[in-house]
Image (cartoon, rainbow, N blue to C red; front, side):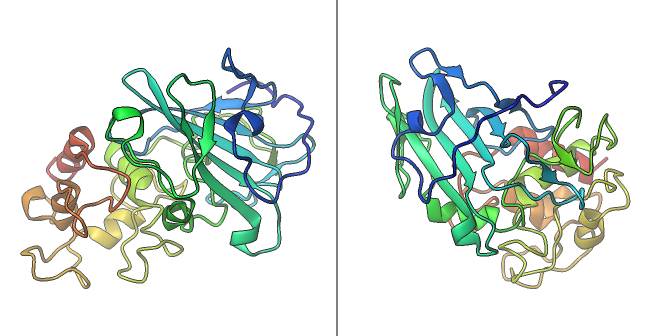
Length: 297
């Protein structure tokens, strides 16, 4: 992280996303792919699996505004905040997703815009596709529709995933209110961090999966310990209540990953069975092994 967030002159947010990525402010020189001044590149400690796509991320907080960090587990972002995430595979830019907070009415549909910009073959620009696109540029990578984005982002009141006190290795230079500096939060156990990043946005009291069960797969900043946290307390030896008839009766069976429903569903890529349920067609073998090793130390 830089020592200070650069100053940014911010125009009023739009009421809808521009049609071209070149009009969103990501690049000062689009042909050279020179990122605009005032953007901060970041990388979360624990990343969301995206079928081996390489991702770059940037955030812009308007000059003179601050992220509300009153609750360090759930930040709220000021109007005008933008976050971009670029996906690439085999050396090709595929899509760039944009989150843009445009209002503060309390109505999520009016307050935040989501969308994916699909890169053209010569990478001279990327076009907003509200309905997403499949198999971009000859790959198996799919971009979600704007509506699909809500399936995950509804689980975070600030609507931002991956940019948080738990996920950032340092808070130095961030415009937080109240101010925070240094590295106050320990990195979570690797398996817990993986579950947090890949499952926690749905499996928490705000998330899309909460109506089906009360399993927590999201960590708070003080829950990095591998033995005492919401993930352990809601998975270990906890019976399944909404997924029966498949031979797995417990969410996680300590010491036995083979009979644990969590690892079984992580190993699948079958509609209505796999976990995560969307945005992936390949099993993350590295992540699965992390969780298996945690269950069977």
